[in-house]
Image 1 (cartoon, one colour):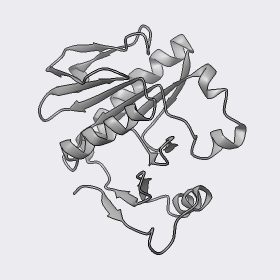
Image 2 (cartoon, rainbow, N blue to C red):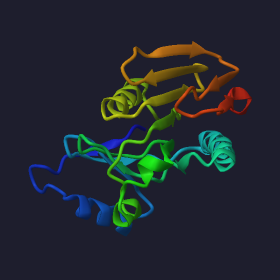
Image 3 (cartoon, one colour):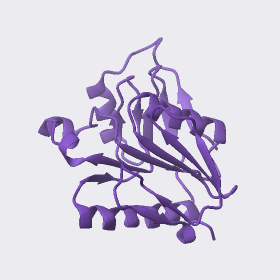
Length: 192
């Protein structure tokens, strides 16, 4: 099952605060909102995807604690992108100096910022086209580096600001390049 889109704009246009309150009042439902203002209800992940997500997040967390270069976020964090969309990547990272430009209130709610890095891990309920469109949306909104990991096809699509998408088949590891200095993701935790 892919995300369910609910078109509310002809009835009501949710403000950012109303969207935030809707999410707070319904914590058991994972909402996103696209640039057109449609409310998206995201299905929960299954066990395999949830475990892979956790393992990937641990790797980012360890690297970030060692380098202290930025702030890591899990899939429950919603970002307000410049195009108006509210998106929750599976993993996100923001340079500390960029994060520090936000006010305490902005940090508390849905940060109005495009992360420096995002990662999307495809689950069986995701469609490749919709996930690729989401990755392009991230890049179009200022994300510098993005990885789309497709365990079923054993592929990684690398999205870079201002560059064409690069597709790798069954990589053993992947470097965070100059966006995530010194970070290397070992794919033995994903290709099982």
